[in-house]
Length: 483
Length: 100
Image 1 (cartoon, rainbow over the protein chains, first blue to last red):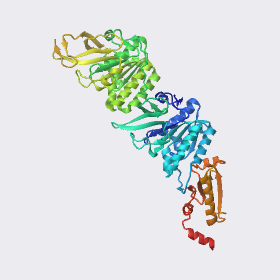
Image 2 (spheres, each protein chain N blue to C red; image 1 turned 30 degrees about the horizontal axis):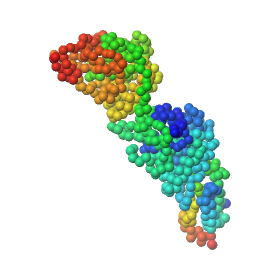
Image 3 (tube, one colour; image 1 turned 60 degrees about the horizontal axis):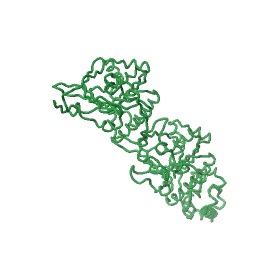
Image 4 (spheres, chains in turn red, yellow; image 1 turned 180 degrees about the vertical axis):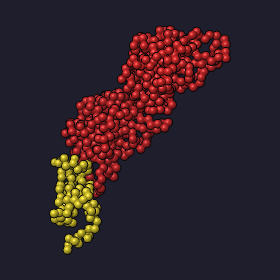
């Protein structure tokens, strides 16, 4: 049996949860302090109002109502307005200034009455309780509170509301929550994490379990964006069902088109690997310039050079990218890799793509983005990025820098080689006391391709590919032997 | 003019509430005869008032006057603690005053 789900409206979350939160049930959302529990919960209500016309009740045991209203304004949610329209109701259970003394037995029936009344009055379908841990700090009698909160969860169930109850964790990898609330809120559990990796914060969301229902397993990174709130990067939810095109487009270099049997496949991912100065940026510039004939729109994301440097260099190769941009067919965006986290880079690239709608995209270089993050984070980023670009049907060229001048491979390639369709190696080779540049097609999915290692020449007309280097073996392993 | 204004929020369906009402009446009659105003509020009948006062627990006693507000939660089973909570620490002194 599969329990039906309530679409949350938090886009990627509905993907990783395979449809949203279990409908009519309560989900425990656990996270350390600063893990964005309150924001995620509030977004659940806000999306309900904005996208599905479903009203919500927000119970706060922690933050003051006024603070929550103010904090949520930065995401473009006008809580005041929704309150006056009866779409959003606060139930204020936050701690107040006056002293509270407990003498003898008590229950939380007043809270339950208030909650029930707000749900009925508002016809609320979504409820948030933030956070259950705070009510344990209000009242020292934890047995009573546990008992009472379990009654609250039964009330929510009876009222057929889909609810999120947040709870604190003291460590990122350990017990689900403090105070043992998972004993009665056990059916559906999600965890938000905010872990320090290589001096950078990495936020992830994990669905631990949805009883009687499917979901994606494991951690998915997310980031917090102004006006959008929580944006999840669904790595593990990727599906490999993108259609592949047999239509060819020009690489921008005539000889290279010939090498790969008539050009790149439309919508494919091309990886260009090479040491510094081997011609990667040139190839990217050619790729952009190649879009000119058919009026394709091109997006160049530069992480190593400024716009001015790129324009100047391209001029030296006989390509007027500046004019191309002025004509509206090219957009060059130059960024330092360090300005944002990988998740934010990804969101930014997605935004640029949605806005500019390019047919081609070049990223020079993708390895520049490995400067900070963890290896796993980078892999996830590349998977999510290629997934997105393929889905959009954009032909993409990523360049990757190798550390050794001759031979060798970079970590980057190891991570992404398997998900790219075409790999081009640009290598320096030492031949009879001379450094020469070479180009090789290492792989091209779905097509016959040239297998030679060819000389390349770079001059004022750009890149020219010459004859194969013959009679010598071991070139790419940097151990040339004359046959 | 009375010197004490006290609200007691109860839920008529709960046994602890009945106990609290009795305990409080006994204390008030004994220590503050004629000197108090007591308002019993049943949250089943007046959920608005519970909302307004942000009541979570039942029973909850609020000492509205004298200021500052004080809140006592529970069945009010321990007299000395209730008195201390209401701001009267020296009970003997108070009783003597009444006798004179």
